[in-house]
Image (tube, rainbow, N blue to C red; front, side):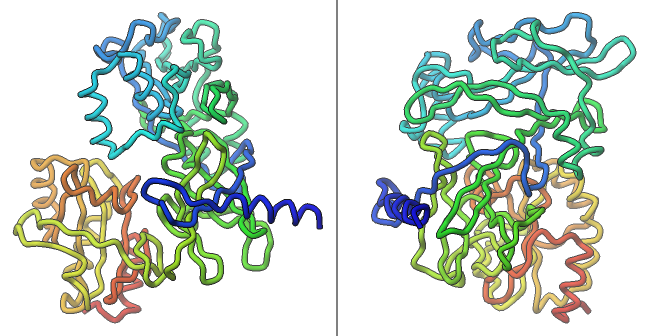
Length: 441
């Protein structure tokens, strides 16, 4: 009884009206408990760009920022950094005079970022981790990480990285290769040194490296357990994903599929009430949720059974105006892809085959292209015989950002009423859905 009373008091105190864009709206702050490992979440990593030392540093970098102690007996040596909070890193560089106001404003515009000074420190913090990779005389790949974050690799032990494909399906086995590193973060208004596990992989294709921070958090909403998964990477939690930790019977889930997670600005449902995921505030160590007045059918999101976020643009080839609203009354298959996405290109012949067979009075396909050059896209459109509408997502029309796209291919199937009925369908799954809908000729 005492525990329940304390929790209710905390829940009451946590219901706040915050300033800014959420002024006057009910915001709930839920305190977090952190855990090592992935818990029920899938192993998730991010690509790590490494470069030769002579091309790594630019005029923005101070002499003090350069990594020391790089092994001299390696061949094809490359170095890089894992930024635990890239916003903090750029913010402190600006205030240290390492980048100009024009450059700082350019970053804000590019990232669509308004610095929140309550979460940032003008005093420099150790918010990135240096590392190097190279080959020995036999061609074996080695890596070394600045585990104590002192800017010097000479006091750290090199190791042979594991291969991503060998471990991506076995979280527990992969965790045996994780090791602790230190960094600094702002918490409670104070700079705090923090320890966290880091896991590094070498892809089967030499030269590709992947990193992950095995960490997740838990909290409760009205007694129900919520898991917080930051994508397994960036600790600034700009991409916070959350999920219910228990099934409908109240039993703890052994595994949470990534498709079950609720991303930033998506909605967590409890009975008929929707809560918008506003992400984690690492300074105050809380998950922020916004209680919504509307029900799921009236809210726009990238989730199944929510209204699809409208998009507008110009068809790349015909220059015709394209929007989801313009296709009301039809099913729409929406595919986000890019020239560098191997999975997208492998799927393209199958997508083309389905488009040729579909009843176009009932269904339309729309491609959204990003991170691609016009010249390359011209060649790909010709190579794969793409005839369905294609719209570019770029700085002037950031469709990818509106949809929270962090990887390709990402797909959505939208019904004639504008509601998402399925997402992340591959071509074979899409074909089955189209057969069910009786729209294949």
